[in-house]
Amino acid sequence: MTTHAHAPTTPATGAPTRGYTATKDQLLTRIRRIEGQVRGIEKMVEDDRYCIDVLTQISAIQAALDKVGLGLLDGHARHCMQAGAEQGRSDEMATEMMAAVGRLMKRG
Image (cartoon, rainbow, N blue to C red; front, side, top):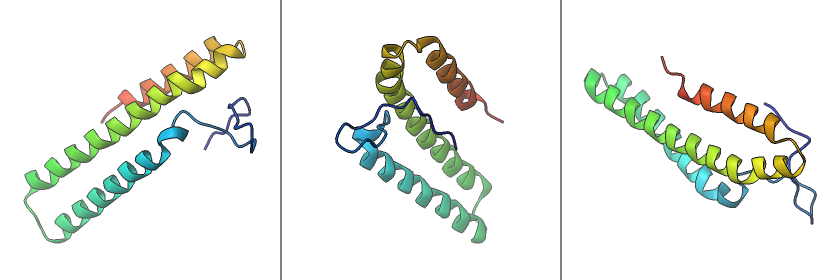
């Protein structure tokens, strides 16, 4: 897990703020829902459900994860990259973000 010393911090506590800080509860709710969907697939396999039904659920989970990833990228662009630009680090931040986009786009 990567932590960045250049992350903006909350003035009162000094704790780092992230692009998702304002929507953290929503993000965690989505992640927990995805976790439940994954458990559902496990049960489907245990119950010998039809292959296409399992694949359909996998597709739904991938779409949900994509939505979480895009939300994180949006928050990063609006919050973290802005802070990086204010620190004169916009090129470094853009390179880091594009690498993250590339990783998100890789499939199979």
